Image 1: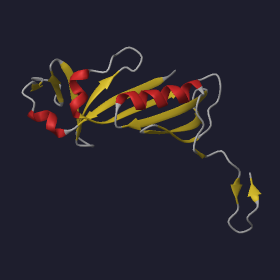
Image 2: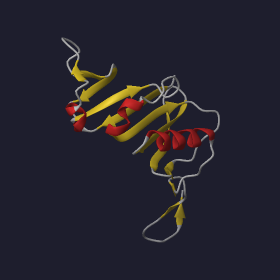
Image 3: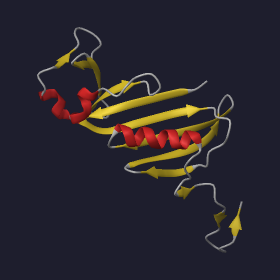
Length: 149
């Protein structure tokens, strides 16, 4: 089982666009901009467009409003990826391995634009980039400066 979430976070200025409309009567926190779904996350107090990275194209109508792209995936992949922090261009991300119904890897990437976030995500997925901060190095004991584990 795999799960993936892609959110295009947009700024509050989107409310000023004449094409920005509330969907009525339900769901409660859903809007549209030129027919593109925009949700409001009450906890984060932010507007975002959910999308499928593998099937949807980036909606160009949102380009002027984008503040951040967030890609999160929990996947079963054939080759392990190093746990740690990654970067490429303007995007940042991290990878963490965990076990739940089989060995999985959690990949989280954020960036200020879609192309850079997507590029880093797929580089990590294909194993084409190493972490700049590797979380799998031997730990050094603070008391003895000797490597442990």
